[in-house]
Amino acid sequence: MTIRATSVDVSIGKAQLLTDVSLDVIPGEVLALVGPNGAGKSTFLSALAGDLAPNEGQVFYDQRDISQLSIQERSFYRSVMSQSQPMVFDFSVRDIVEMGWLHRDHSFYNEYFSVAAQQIIEQCSITSLVDRRFNTLSGGEQKRVHFARALLQLWLPQGSNESRYLLLDEPLANLDIAHELNMLNVIKQTAASGIGVLIVLHDLNLAAKFADKIALFDQGKMVSLGTPKQVLTENSLSTVYGVTVTVAQTPLTISYY
Image (cartoon, rainbow, N blue to C red; front, side, top):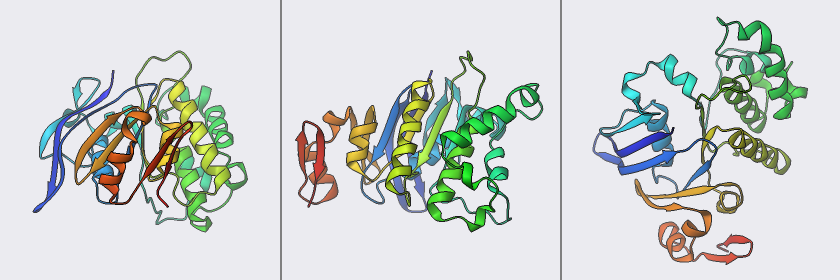
């Protein structure tokens, strides 16, 4: 049971953004995409989410071709947190979080909705924000609210064995240290519950510490895939990033200045 990309190519006009990328997002695992700006990480996430159709190759959700799934069907499989998600209308924070709930026409709504929403609000440390207007929040606060919305979208009652996937594009941008660590710990807890997580990260040390696997991208191609120690090597990182990178092994620590 996976999200599986096979030989995905994406081009826009004359620009080749992805070339022959194959990758699995596995339930219970945190997979980090790393690489320099313009390497194709966000483009690949958009292709996995179904927001961008590959020119070549296919994406499957648990063996179902994504092109055969409606937007509503995709929303039950995966939630997406993009780099920027501005709101034109002046919704409250609680409104934004509750937009993630997909079970309004189901008996789950009356039985679980309030408890599930409150648990996630507390888990994401946004209790003090719920009565504020979303557009009055800082960039980091808005990130935390959208993260809570994405988690609520994936909610299922205990004992469910349905596959779910969380796709996060640079969710840590603009977060202070405490909230960064809290979000990463929640991500690990989410994976431990059986949800597959794909996260785009720029901080290589955070990827080394929190990811189960890492995919290194460069110029639209995946150049390496494996455990942090397998992927985050001095030769690979120095070549891809164009600077001298040193790697200490215990604990795995990346330095470039």
